[in-house]
Image (tube, rainbow, N blue to C red):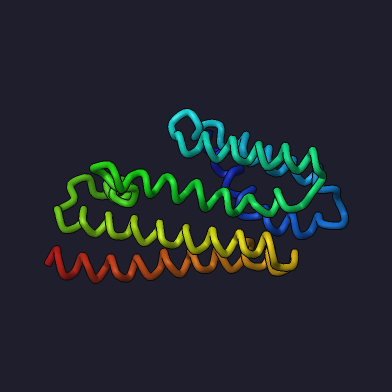
Length: 182
């Protein structure tokens, strides 16, 4: 199970670079195998999460369209699908008593004070905003940018931005804890 989760992460991280490298060397229909592998690697998560099932179905749909048309565009839409799936998962929890970030926080600290619960809900909203913007840029690069720019953004820059957001939130969280927990 952990091996499949690790494979899913590796496939997602390497996917834009593999598509970039494969363009002109491998027919798109063969690159679609990467989408099928990504969907299969998520099978264990699909049992527990509706958003994982939708993401897996979306990856298989993109793979099928790629195979039928032997076109690159469906392959380039996968990062859009990933952002949409993450947005759906995070946004859904905003309508529930426990937000996504609160779920993560409670893994380390089960008894969160009310101020921390409110903070985690705000952070969940920030991540939703990130997924909207990142997904829109991923879509724009898929539709209008060169293959190189698409690969650079979706394979390097997007992950860098995600890392910056993680780091910034960590620093804000440290300050929040200092202010609210003595």
